[in-house]
Amino acid sequence: MAPVAMRLAAQSLSDAQPVPFWLEDPGKPGALPALTGTEKCDLLVVGGGYSGLWTALLAKERDPARDVVLIEGREVGWAASGRNGGFCAASLTHGFGNGLARWPGELPKLEELGERNLDGIEEAVARYSLDCDFERTGEIDVATEPYQLDELHEMYEEIDRLGLADGLELLDRDAVRAEVDSPTFLGGLWDRRGVAMLNPAKLAWGLKRACMELGVRIYENTPGLDLVSAGAGMGVRTPYGRVLARRVALGTNVFPSLVKRVRAYTVPVYDYALMTEPLSPEQLASVGWKNRQGLGDSANQFHYFRITADHRILWGGYDAIYPFGGKVSAEMDHRPETYLKLAEHFFRCFPQLEGLRFSHAWGGAIDTCSRFSAFFGTAYQGKVAYAAGFTGLGVGATRFGGDVMLDLLAGERTERTGLEMVRRKPLPFPPEPVAWAGIGITKWAMARADENGGRRNLWLKAMDRMGLGFDS
Image 1: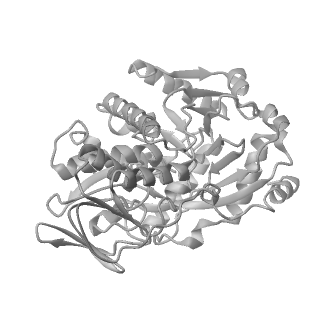
Image 2 (image 1 turned 90 degrees about the vertical axis):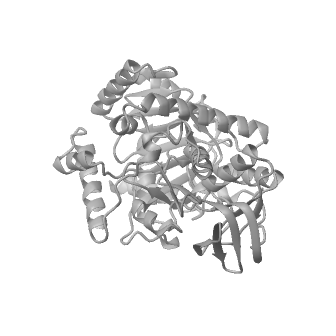
Image 3 (image 1 turned 180 degrees about the vertical axis):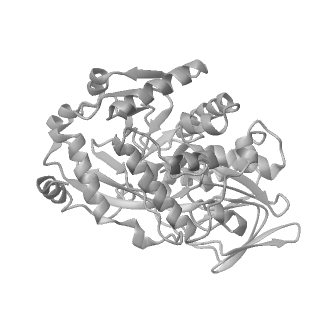
């Protein structure tokens, strides 16, 4: 980073508050009381992020008489569900390319289910009046290097060959810059309907309210400490009590699963984001962005960015940090060296916004698995179900995961539970120090590929063949 660019980037961060922008909203609901004593229910949901909230809501929609309890270790939406970029994608497979590589025969069905899932989210936003700034504006994958432009064209041709290109539009340099103006953009692929933008914390808080209105009993500051069989059902111990339930759905994602054998399938990867102050009308005009799409560049170490309801720009991604030992720690929620790097990259993308300042800077852990998309399963003779490993695309896919968990708990074979994606697990991560070394080498190799026209070295090719990788 050149000294001048570094100085300007540092100055832009001088007032940035080290807290997630979304969670500072004055409309944030107060915490509910913790569980004390013994509760009994038909279904216990563990985890108050999107995964748990959607599961509880869908359970009550399926059977309004079902007695549902949800426990959350802190407050609803405080972790990944309140810290993400607000990209709510239809994709269940972490993008078309990943889905094609892993489930080519199922991809048309997976795409259809993903579209129906996003439609279901949009319908729920309307039905329950979820005030979360939901805008189905789509997303543009932008190319900033010639090889990325070639890859986008090849991807579009493959999607079109499978008859799945409805709603997709290739944009040349002038067309993409007419949408969002950056001198770094060479072209793009616009998915017009497959992604919605929203306020992630408001979505979590709205789902909390909707669940309570349907009769779900929610206890906050109530972590589940252990899981044991209890007669015909299950028991979960909490700090001040316990819950006895016929069935349990685990939506704990990045946090250690109460089913210990599941823990090897995920690792925490820390992702970081900046939020700017609101753009002035002149600054906004210099960028364009009238159609308010989400954007992401096409590098291995990529950035994602979007504009908010009050005309701020969220800019995140690039660094993906895995802590040795895979521990989730509040100390990892902030990384000034990453903030500085992100700020410098921001002004390289939007030089016309020089002088704009960042108001917030934060990080959070993503539940990452080796196939980059969620996996599912049951334990305790089908009395417990889990979904995890969403790898950064959980804003939309967690609702699908909730449906899968409910199908599994009911013992039903549905179009969801029949999927190979649902029936099979990803490869687990190796123990330390192999995991840390392997992830580090993979990150280095991905950065080298970005610098060398996208060419993947022998290490990345071997990881591809093994079904292992590293992505955020």
